[in-house]
Image (cartoon, rainbow, N blue to C red):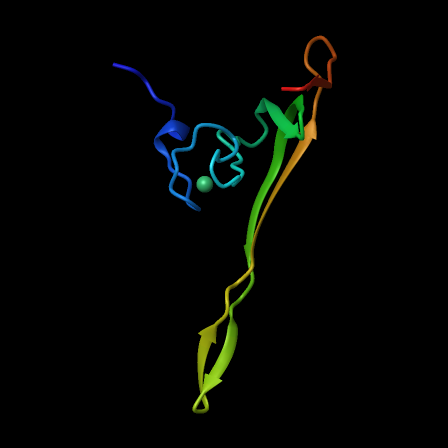
Amino acid sequence: MSMKSARDRLNCPNCGAPITSYKCEYCGTLFYDFANLELYEPSYIRLRIGDTLNIFRAVTTSIEVTQSSPEVCYADNKPFLCGNPDITVTVEMRVVSDDKGVLMERRRNV
Ligand SMILES: [Zn+2]
């Protein structure tokens, strides 16, 4: 019996193709994994920018979710809630060194 990761079991919400990478092979939709955001627990962050993978050790110092109120619209002089509220997720991380003092590692062409 083979074990599959959670990502392998998901399908792209945009086109329905199986998700096999950080990017949908069919439509190009990007996926970001934030698997273990524990406040104040140091963890290693893999941040891919183009063909460069940046790896750094960081502590998540705050996770904040804010949502704006929906608009009030009127129809026949009766108010109702309309529009899509803006939802903002803000994650703040502070980069910290490990025992060797390394702050960041870069790998190109990955
Ligand atoms: Zn897709």
